[in-house]
Amino acid sequence: MDLKSQKNFYTYFMLIGFTILLLLSYQSTEFDFFALFGKKSRRNIFFFVKGMFPPDTGTEFLKVVGMAILETISISIMGTLFGIVIALSLTFFATRTLTYSGILHEMEPNRFVSRSIWRLINILSRLLLNLFRAVPELVWALIFILSVGIGPFPGVLALGVHTGGILGKLYSEFFEDVDSQPLEALLSMGTTKMQILLYGMLPQALPQFISYTLYRWEVNIRAATILGYVGAGGIGQQIYINMNLTFYNKLMTLILVILLMVTLVDRLSAFIRRKLLTQ
Amino acid sequence: MKALADSKTLYQDAKSKIPLWWYFGPLVFLLVMAVSSRIAEVDLSVMLDAKVRHDTFEFVRLMFPPDLSWEFIKFTAKPALETIYISVMGMALAIAIGFPLALFATNSLTFAGVLNEMARGKRSRYRLIGYLCYGLSRMVLNVLRAIPELVWALIFIVAVGLGPFPGVLAIGISYGGTLGKIYAEILEGIDLRPLEALQSTGARRLQVVLYGALPEALPDFVAYTLYRWECSVRSAAILGFVGAGGIGQQIDISIRMFNFNQLLTLILIIFLMVTAIDQLSALIRKRLN
Image 1 (cartoon, rainbow over the protein chains, first blue to last red):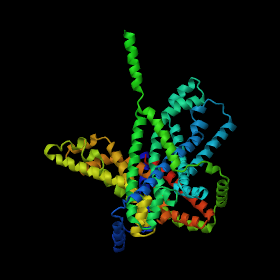
Image 2 (cartoon, one colour):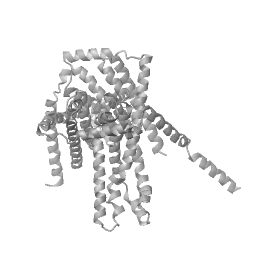
Image 3 (tube, each protein chain N blue to C red):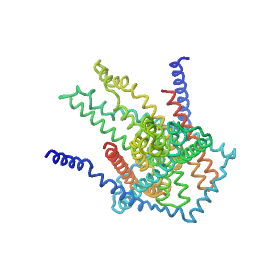
């Protein structure tokens, strides 16, 4: 088959596959659009929404919410910081072009053993990073809560480990995607590998580092909220408490505050991004 | 004289080259780090505490060996599959919600730019309506994506009960917001000249969008949606924890029963699922290009 009809074949094949998957999902998840508007759920929704208004804006509760918000923001900042530390310590081993392949290693005599050892180190560190990022943050939070107790600290650790895995993988990909011509130029001048890393690869990859790390902070703010639900402090814990006590008006306040916080963090992150990346 | 003038210019140049915030930035950063580490009760010495270390190792030891009995694996197949179904159905709902909203949330399609030049003077009300649609849909998208999926799931569990359905709705709504915003950003970045050409032949606005904007934006749409699908599988796994069906519910049960071998198996299953979807979506993206 020529290339075009080969492409068409795959496209049709995938479309059919997706349609089958979609139909299976529709049936299996008991997706009943009309149940949303059925009598029982309308009643539930009505009482739920009625309970949410007016939102509880008493000063006492607002003080609690204020503390919780500060805690959640702190968890997200610290978690992202831990993530950066973990990522940076593993990135260099996880980058293929820094350990055994790419132009940095072309000139070396082919020493099989040392190359294989570096390859093994590379594979192991990438496996570790994958493990960190595949396990959802909530599961990490549960694990750390069982280790160090309830409170905001296990949330920080959980976010740190999970973010570390994600950032580590991305940083190594940014390093690998760097333009190799400046590196070759530096190499031909006889610079050491460390210097090539600092002056050749890092300046190119740094804008993407910063941009993606800031984006990760935005994501972590939402994640920190969820982690609180299982006991890792912050606003999530308030949601858990008030949900179980069915204090829906307090829940409404919490939702509004979360909205405000997320918008604020998004704006702040965009501001920092502008300042750092356009100078 | 000229040398003096030159040195003065050099001094002024040097003075203006370092922005003020360069001094404040690092200080603010350090202050924020210090304050938040206090509030978040970051205490690294806790990790070195003997009891904590003992407990952690005990915990890890209890997780091995993972429960690989055929009985348990058969038992977890259904929730695992259900998680995937929740994510697929959720993404379908998200596309259905996000795409129409994205069309309204694009400034180049609603009120700005070359497509709307004709609406001037008496017809500037037309432009105002466009602006209002833009503002409203942007606000809706922001609300949809700012509220965490867990909160949406809790809301829907109250509305429609437990099971996989509230999970689907939660993922659909929150990812609808995310997809909508990104679709809008993609649409704002496309080349407007084909659209202008179409408009000049008298095509109606919907036709301009479908035949002009969509073909150009579609590859980016598909790529981003596939990426988001992988994230939604992870979300679906978590949502089960509050009762929205799937593997998350199993994790909750296993932890409550202190059956950590099962917990390790479930974690491994999630790991395999996410990796499989990751590879699948990468394969699809490669094939489509």
